[in-house]
View 1 (tube, rainbow, N blue to C red):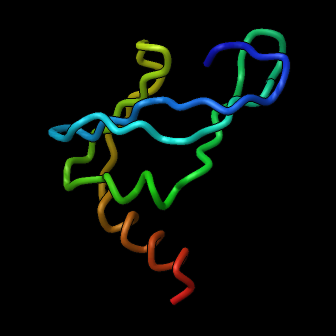
View 2: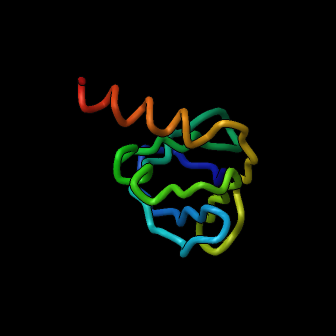
Length: 87
């Protein structure tokens, strides 16, 4: 993650394998001298774009900053969305 000296709003792009890239809302928070922590500010909005593929890539300023491959992602997604609806 890029270094930052103050909290700032950013809009990285999230891509689930086989789907179109989606801009998401996030914040970059200072962490140490040379890095920052990315905090997703719209988790529900992000999860709406998730698909059945288990690979996700995050780009910021045109650079890949994160890539993950997950097992059981859709089951976890469904549980999280249900929890956030307080059902």
